[in-house]
Image (tube, rainbow, N blue to C red; front, side, top):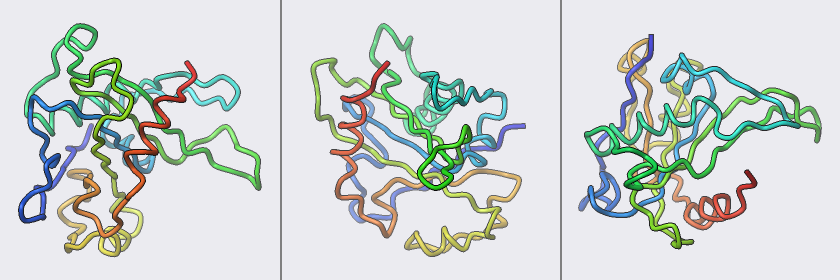
Length: 188
């Protein structure tokens, strides 16, 4: 059974202009986190991992993007190919490494999608969201990385915490450049 995705309200005063994003604003959204947490959100998604034959997008990508879209905008996306409401642009595969050699195993997954971004736009605004795994360490990392207290009882077996960059201690000054660079360099 899938757990609920929980994106807390913005803690900034005033709130960050992308958290939550205005419905009609063009925005590139990137979400990533530990594979174990992604699997809790979309357990029905199969993984097809092969370092030499990468599948884009992984089955989890569209499912995760749709879930995030619905949480952010409070509605289902329009037909993806017609309106530009939700267009999958990139994915992140966090390969498990043995020395400098990637194994055929990932431990992190992420997806990037566009909401109303014109096709000719190369440098859209970016909303970076991180999924935090609470169960593996009882919330210790979340309580270190976030400027607010996380109670593991609020998440264990109930929901998965995902926090936009504006509500984290880490500032991510290169997020827009990095995400847009990765989309521009996607080899399909």
